[in-house]
Image (cartoon, rainbow, N blue to C red):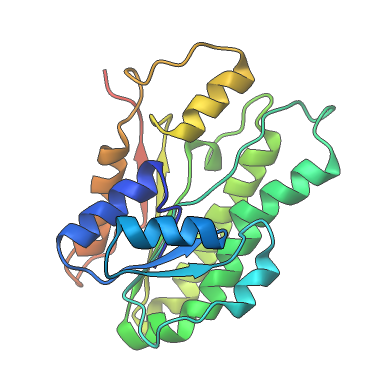
Length: 221
């Protein structure tokens, strides 16, 4: 099951899993996006819920077995603590933290049944916070806490948990960040989404005798 399969890292991960024959369950924020995903990934199942409104996840029908739950979707709004209002904080925390917690909670029976794997595509901001990144970084620090707690709680049930912390990655989100920073966007210096997808699949495919817990990635030279 994948969130964020419509673009960026999530789209690359979904493409690779589809190519090797995995059955995909893709979360879409509305019916229009669900139809687009169903067309792009034939044979997949698209389910509708708005991560910015985590209560909508209660209507999502989940498989009895979930081999992997991949949290890749996210939102970002930059601004100083002085400028970011309560609505921005609420939206960011709901989409980036509360929704992943709720979706994971609902998927746990299926994950336990499959001895499955939860992957949180976090961010470098989940380890360090910088000026004007407070809301986003807070949501990602919280996501790290969620992953760390989940890993300890579910280890005995055979559920593996991995956090991936990419630095700046050449995705539509990065283009939006550059616009908010008032900078011209050039994808060339940044991590390719394909590289992050490789890290995700490496964690998933690791033999059962080991668990990749935390993977930090930075743009190369």
